[in-house]
Length: 105
Image (cartoon, rainbow, N blue to C red; front, side, top):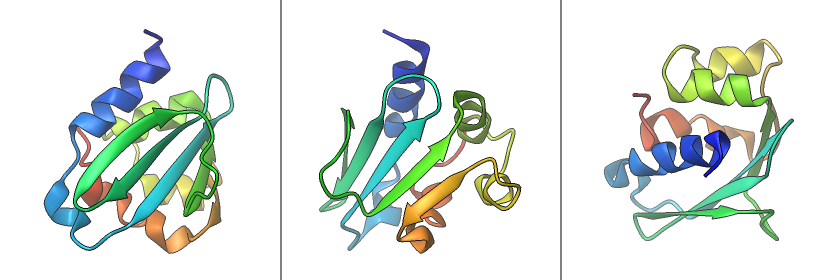
């Protein structure tokens, strides 16, 4: 398993189903290096998959170091976005829910 895949599996393992009540969304991640992954949230459940989703709600682009820092709680995702370290397309407001959906370790 690649380090990147391990990071995504760690993130999915922290899924907070209470924060996902009533949410139907697909978060597409495109890291500058490595494979693309997406997390589909539906019915209070989270499904992680590798590749590109046909119709993501929001696409988040960053390097793997930024993803790792946000996941580990070293960097605030919103601050990283404001600093230009994370780029987003689509329903950018959905990205503001990520911290509640996947609490940092």
